[in-house]
Length: 345
Image (cartoon, rainbow, N blue to C red; front, top):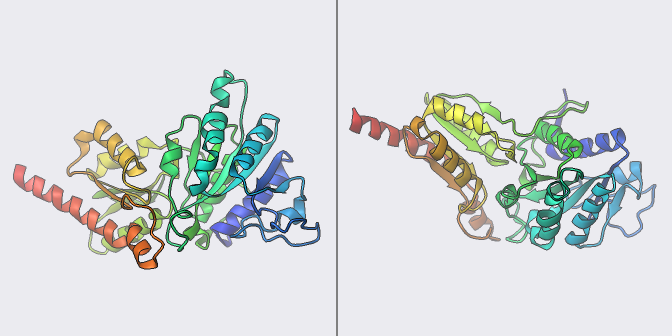
């Protein structure tokens, strides 16, 4: 099985789904090269990160559509195309631009099935880039997936590796409901083994990337890589950390989290988004409400601070939850439980 980067996995999936289903179209800024008249024989750049490279040459301008720089028009057109029977994949280049088209997403696309009594489907996939660590500044580096997770009618995907990116994107494109597919920019060059053939991964099914008995560590997107590093490092000291990658925030695999906390009695949640109303807060709240009796220590959250993403590289490095901060949180909950056990023993 060949190793592929997240970028290659996404590009491959788009091509395979377009070949499989002629209703699948791709639209967005620069998806066909942004050259204002790219010819059928010319290789298109495929956007700023090359995610759609080669699609224009194979499928042409009727299915790979460069749009003006207007997010409201891109998402509005995608919603209309879905209602008309197409399966559009719209690229919202950076999730920070969500405010420009939030009405189209939150008040229209997410509510069509509900407002039309289940008689209408809106199979829209919105691909968007998230995350800090690339020096893109405060207007291009947000991790705003919790904001979209709270909108009823949307499904939200946060893959952490190339294998998951391919399977989850195929599921998203085939889904009859709108899906927000969040790609962390710092993961595009991360590689793992990915099958050449198409496959799907169900939404709402978490992946346990490390099995453990002492602490449950729930992490999202790029933070899964950091969590795995912490688990591997602590394993050398005999500390057994279970790492859970939910893969999707809506639907969220609550049972996987509850089962793990029931086993370990301790929970650390790592989320690159800001701390207030974050997925870290949501997971902590769920466990506190539904599995409090399982806890042997207070829940720990590791998040970005409640500030915009800094532009300065050293400040940005400090902003992103680090391996060191995650490890410190794991050690803290272990110490807290030891202290609690000693006090009650």
